Length: 549
Image 1 (cartoon, rainbow, N blue to C red):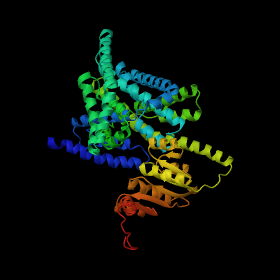
Image 2: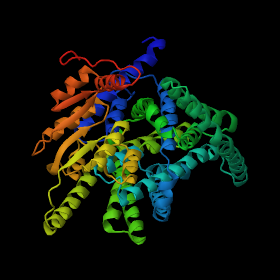
Image 3: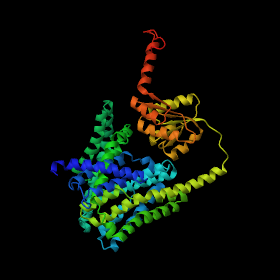
């Protein structure tokens, strides 16, 4: 294949295979990350057939790392961390220390150098944010106490790994105490200078720039500004201060999150972040040699045991010792029984600095793939356990009186207006939205709000569809709205569904999926404007005759 087409080939084949295997993983109720990694294995040098360019893949992965870290910064919440600091901070530190020690012990037993063993253990100590959030959302636990503790726990882990990504390059190749001290001092000064510049200057400049660009009204310029901030700060951090791209991108995201437009920045940059995150996982899979599953099965099982048993037991013990219930402790233990993106970033850095061998990297990748595949089973066991407890409570509780409420699916601009009208009309309703900020806003307004996708059984069950009189879908995406409408019509007692649409094709799609009526926004707006024009005193236009409107 000509060299100039290798980038096109790896992008095309990588995306296609990632989609196919990601969809297959989703159908099997696994994380799509498993599918992305398998897609990478298939285009890697260790399997027959097409082999992706081994020089381009790491560069694409580096872009993926920058955008992943930018996304972590955009969603970093100091408020969430402070709320659970008494449990999350000591718990995460103890759990990471125990997991690192277990990894070091396994490496020592296998005869590895101490530096390699410590990095190996550290890579096993941190859970995947992507996998955890998906598990908490599907289990309806993200807004619960145990969900908030798990998220705070992960924030501490993420911060620890950001620090590790800064220090590991500085420590590489410095074994003597005097040289190590100088390197740590120099690195601390560089990192301190960068953080000071970002907090003093960047904290004012980046949000200011974002707001000025937002004032232009151009969505493409706004999106470009968000990406320019992420890439520009990451590049500047590396070039001017010698710190990692990852740290620069993290701070760029964290500072933009403080802007009033932080939520929109996260929303607009999501498609590109998702695309390059997929390429990141594909590039990681390209490095994995499946032969290790056959050549070193015992070591793979020991690695998996550290991830799913050792880490989880440490977390469960800490949570129980700090006075929390067994239910919370089990949820935290299950949440941490997997590893993901930070582990891949760390081992990639270790291999590039020659601190880790390819065999060690393969053990981590094998542990990651297997733990991500098995982690949903743990949450399924917890879900059945909670379901049994809820059935006992429901049997003991008195029957609830009937309530004919409205299911208001979507709390955006249209949903907020509709909620106000329903409140003034004294019509009871329940808000359902996938966005955490919108759900929190609805609750602050005094409304009952549920976070999640209304097409999910657990979310819908919480909204009590059997007692609903009507469902109004205000979400703008016709595909998502169609899925919700179809699910509502599959209830034991089908619910009348009203939906909004932005095109004739969307109206047709929604009606085919079961919506009883779909209102075309442009038509409704046009009729409203005509009514306003007809009622304006200066004009006094005659009203059209019946049938000619």
